[in-house]
Image (cartoon, rainbow, N blue to C red):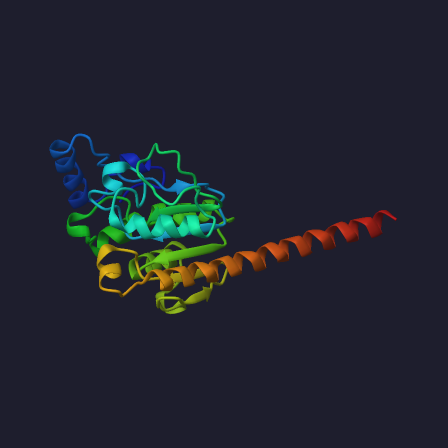
Amino acid sequence: MPSTLTPLLECRACPRLAAFLDDCRRERPGYHARPVEPFGDPKATLLIVGLAPGYHGANRSGRPFTGDYAGVLLYSTLHRFGFASRPQSVSADDGLQLIDCRITNAVKCVPPENKPETGEIRTCNRFLASELAASPEARIILALGLVAHNAVLQGLTLQRSTCKFAHGARHVLPDGRILHDSYHCSRYNTQTRRLTEPAFHAVFEAIRADLKTKFQWRLTSASSALSAAAVTKN
């Protein structure tokens, strides 16, 4: 087990994944081939949690959902809804910026055949748990797929029975955060039409509605506080 102080890029807690990355670095020296760090503002309101880096995507580029098919729909949607400065993520140094949004993965290392084992998901969860604990500003969480959904619950020390995964589902968690669910924007899910662009956009419309409500609540609370302070002063 890695210590909570183990830097992510140095983690080798999962022997199968560490060996797979070692092989990748030998065969493809131009690839990142290390654990992939989150991308975006650590104080963002929206946190998106995916499954794991893709072999020719984040494992190559070093940025989540960058360089593979899954990122095409994700980043175009983020741009459409005002969470990204451009609709395409080409490389880690392409100048793309996320806006009040952060992207991470349940498993930080690319797994063989894109299938992390249960023990690997559990071992890696301490990194996601640390991200969640260090980011109280992340009031809206989007889980891309069942594995990400369960990883978020584990990272918040919640039982799986707290809420069931379903595409388009919206769960209010005990700490007040809101967890939205979507099918993963993988090539398989989009090509089989399990996930369509309109269905993915509908999830983001719900997220935007939640953010608008929370923003209005903050403005109302701030206004009330200012009014109370004025009354006290007078």
